[in-house]
Image (tube, rainbow, N blue to C red; front, side, top):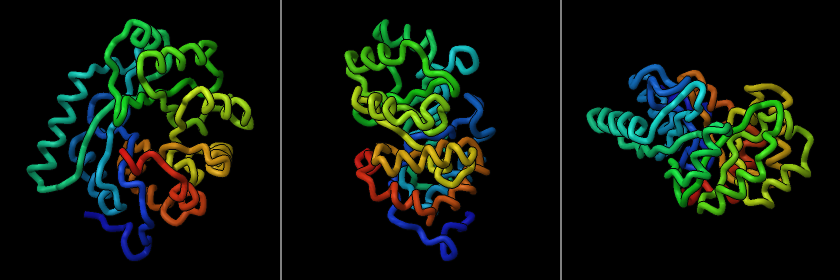
Length: 241
């Protein structure tokens, strides 16, 4: 086990539950093997996490995952952890991509993969806001779901668009920021946007969005980061999941 979070990188009080990751192999662009998933989970434990809700992509054009397929992989990972005597809670949901297929699933009343109290994690394209986003959010809420927008800091259409961010929150959208965004991993503009969300106190969830071992290793940069620490002092919903 690689204990790089210890000694040199003292661990602050963490949010314990990671609600966004890609730890099930051969389902999306996440880990390539169960062995890699186990190494990541060991690093998560060293960082202070006790639970991960892993969220494979569901994207009609690329990752046509099903509830049964995701559950099968999660059960297999749990079995491997048990065999290795690794005590770590693995749950699963999905990261849905906003497209016509997702709209059809929701409007058709399909049962969706959620976490906690019917929280539904979704993402959009990076560049342009979907025209029917407001209607989709309304339909989600009508169906009893609580929309969680994955990594809003990565959407260019929200950069410096603080009125729209506030409007989304007013409509009942919860915002999940990636921990690595606070370190500048994706880009400086994304870091600035993430920091601004923290300053606005509009971060409801933190997530690792961990896809591979490198991402897990880079999480140590978030430990001690000013804005990461500031985010931990917000009333994050991770604490109650």
